[in-house]
Length: 386
Image (cartoon, rainbow, N blue to C red; front, top):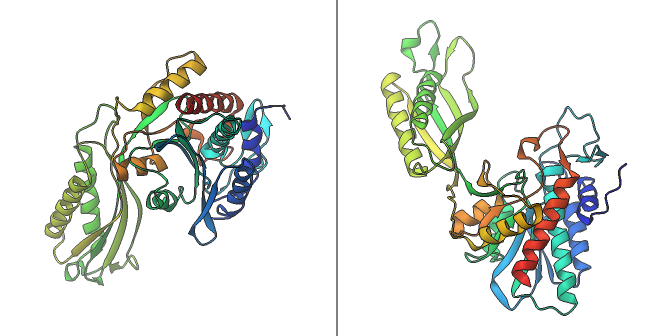
């Protein structure tokens, strides 16, 4: 094994070796590990149960100004391990300068960088330096599922509309500050059963759903694009319906994932779905349809005046000696939830690794990415605190 002396690279390996799959082992063991590590820094540490046996972790270095505080927020769970690995998914092997394992880039290496930077600032504060701002580390649960961890962080007031909030999702060397909205629908069509030899005696729920799907797909494709975020998209991720090929189906249900860019928002998406339902009722007489919104996250646009964006860009460019691109994050993150719910313009992502490798077999993170991110996060914290 290659030797890497960075605190964050070694910590990345330790974290990967703790199974925190969601669903699966969940975050109990990794939360206990992080709680113990933070407790050794002689700073206040809170462990808050969000779901049975699943705890958010929060540690705080008190500064002269408590709000806004600098906040590094990282999720502790990973997706399931899955099939197709050629390395041990919990082995954290170092091969050709890369650490392999589930969560290597999403986001145990970023979590390690945040913990390393927080530890360094705790040591400086312990030496007698008084931070200008408070510095908070938060580890969340459930990010890979319903994001109930960050929802609880907001409810508990661990972050505010003024906080400087950074997550360390893999951003491939970029600062990512904007997000497409994410709206989920569950659409149900009820028809009338009949024998397939006399279909006119029934009302085909699946045929009606096909009309709805086609209409939604077409209209989302017609929505305007956005300069930073690109185009709105729709995915029909799951569908069920019918009983036998020779029976006119009287039930069909589809689950829809829309990723929306300005000006298309959830209200516009509702209009699209309702229009599709009306058209299906004309195309397939006798059916009835309904929908439920099962997820509603607003789009987040870049704010060029953001204090944290300017400070992070300066820290990253001082570290790398290069211009650092500012772009958008293709998924939805803990900071996006905070930005959307609290209307906080100082929420963004910067972390080691490439999101394209996340959730895949043989997930890895380059050690040099960890070293870069560890230095950027430490430099950023020092510039804001001291």
